[in-house]
Amino acid sequence: MKGANWHKLTKTRLSFTVIILLIAIFIICAWERNPLITSFGLSSDQFKSIPKDFANLQESVPGSKLPSKVPDDTSEAPDIDPNEWTNESEDDEVRENDPEECNYAKGKWVPDARRPFYSGSECKRWLSEMWACRLMQRPDFSFEKFRWQPQNCQMPSFTGPRFLKRMQHKTLAFVGDSLGRQQFQSMMCMITGGKPAPQVQDVGWEFGLVKARGAVRPDGWAYRFPRTNTTVLFYWSASLCELQPLLNGSDPKPVSYALHLDRPVTFLKKYLDRFHVLVLNTGHHWNRGKFQGNHWELHAYGKPVGDSKLSDLSNAKNLTLHSIVSWLNSQIVKNPNLKVFLRTLSPRHFVNGDWNTGGSCDNTVPLRGGSEVSLEKSSDPVVQQAVNGSLVRLLDITALSQLRDECHISKYSKSSNGVHDCLHWCLPGVPDTWNEILFARI
Ligand SMILES: *[C@@H]1O[C@H](CO)[C@@H](O)[C@H](O)[C@H]1NC(C)=O
Ligand SMILES: *[C@@H]1O[C@H](CO)[C@@H](O)[C@H](O)[C@H]1NC(C)=O
Ligand SMILES: *[C@@H]1O[C@H](CO)[C@@H](O)[C@H](O)[C@H]1NC(C)=O
Ligand SMILES: *[C@@H]1O[C@H](CO)[C@@H](O)[C@H](O)[C@H]1NC(C)=O
Ligand SMILES: *[C@@H]1O[C@H](CO)[C@@H](O)[C@H](O)[C@H]1NC(C)=O
Picture 1: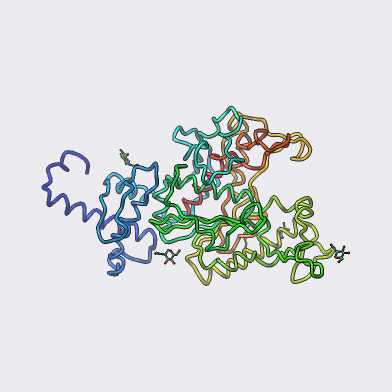
Picture 2: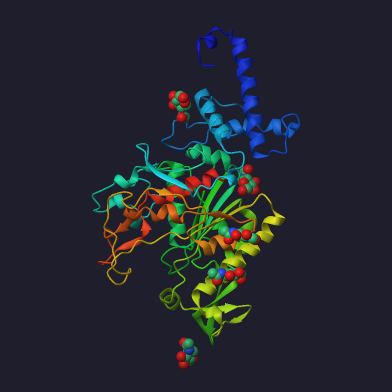
């Protein structure tokens, strides 16, 4: 197409060919999204949306090569670099027809000079300083230059504009603990390339995410990319269960919280119908220390669990996972466009002790313990079993993350007081890969 013949075409034939090509690409894209629409069965409504697809290709992300000024609406088709079209559509064509057929958890880490997706010295609007290892004393960053190669399928290449195009008029919600917050921050940095993106709006208030008086931070954050009307949010819920404050007499300050294992966290019940993609995680808070620190008291089926088998936290967690999956499954049945992922456990890498007994993770050599995952089953069987047979999908990142012990904050955190962090990841880093896999599946 780009050869000498191209130039021989007359101007008229050229534009005619381009129009045919664009329509063909649009039909292919529409078909990929919804195989039930045949290329001949497109309604006039779907044709009308062509200019919209032009517009949303143009989502302006600083640092990308796309022009930053775009007509607001569909009245004019903006200029498009045909290369971008071509690459975009080629990319869509190599996508699996059914991404669910690929096990993205199987594969290997390979060196890639084009990584990372953003600089850890930038992205200051979204990346917490406590996770930006580039802002710490850490000397070695070779770990940033790897990408995950699934064994039997192509990983579609993530770019901010592609993500936003796919998520036009949609909301991606992360709900979980601090590892979920890491994935959220990673996603914001990946979409923007870590560049300041002043056009991105803070829309936390729409989801009740505002800092309460006296609170250190709000319970979450929500941001909107206005050109594509794409919202990305995070809500902090370490257990994914409903927490009910337990009061003592008239004292307004709760003495403790009932953790209702069989009830989904209120935020989800309230806002689920606004989400199109939901990514959940829980795991590291299911230990006695966290429960005591948070004053959580286990309840199930409306009453305290007492000394039943649910007083064992691994059983309690398992009940929660099964309950939330079963509730979400019933919601997906009602709204089949909703895509829900339960992320498997993010592995910890403490050696010679735990976090509070001098454990550390000093290795800086990437992939010292191997680079490949060939297991068919997840290394997090509890989560895998919880989603098995439901419409909730598994975002299985445990084994591939297990190979990356050199990617944690380690001893470099400023506020560590000598405690090593072998739980959270440096960003950019491993959670970027979780987001690539997520992108491949939405
Ligand atoms: C598209 O591909 C061409 C060559 O294949 C390359 O020169 C161009 O930079 C690519 N554009 C984007 C946006 O990746
Ligand atoms: C933005 O997207 C939401 C769905 O997430 C939709 O309800 C709303 O109407 C959209 N707004 C505009 C201006 O298109
Ligand atoms: C509840 O309040 C009473 C006094 O009003 C106090 O003696 C008791 O210790 C409180 N219980 C808890 C669990 O804080
Ligand atoms: C988790 O709960 C499910 C459903 O109640 C049960 O079938 C399964 O055996 C439990 N798994 C574990 C590891 O306890
Ligand atoms: C999922 O459930 C089916 C039966 O319902 C069982 O055969 C299969 O082994 C399960 N898979 C996993 C990974 O637990």
